[in-house]
Amino acid sequence: MRTNIVIDDTLMQKAMKISGLKTKREVVEKAIIEFVANRTRKDLKELRGKIEFADDYDYRSMRGRRQ
Image 1 (tube, rainbow, N blue to C red):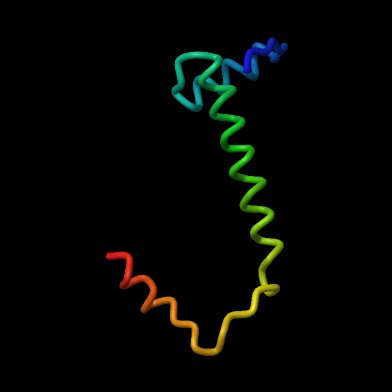
Image 2: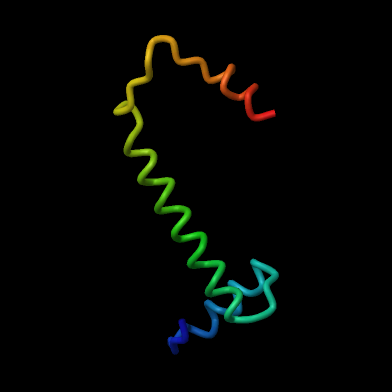
């Protein structure tokens, strides 16, 4: 998606320096990716204590199947 936005120059320079990214486009894309990931984790935290597992649920045995 193509769009034009106005971003504070000082903020952008700090973001580029901290991230090590070379272009403004890379910085904006990385920021959006991290924003979405952060919000997704926050939503998962809200589920804590609301999921009930079966009494015979054994996560260790399920891990072994992936190998």
